[in-house]
Image 1 (tube, rainbow, N blue to C red):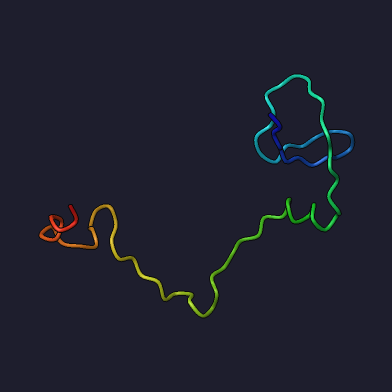
Image 2 (image 1 turned 90 degrees about the vertical axis):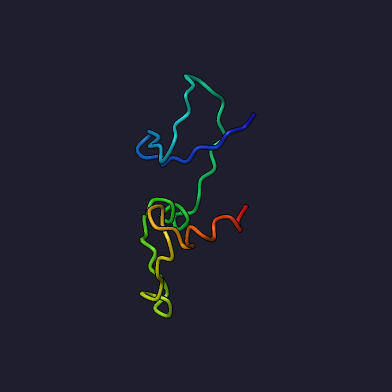
Length: 77
């Protein structure tokens, strides 16, 4: 079965970006991405919410305090 792994090739060596194969020897096929696409893989951008929705969310319930009351639990069965 074929498996894919992400890596960066630098100065004759592979720098693994995630899991690295747990094999000692294998036949490989290497696909070289254009410089623009390769830089997208290595850059870590932090995503921000749209200004239209930023700060407008609210927590409705959590593990300690559920969103519904205990009396309503029977209706969920």
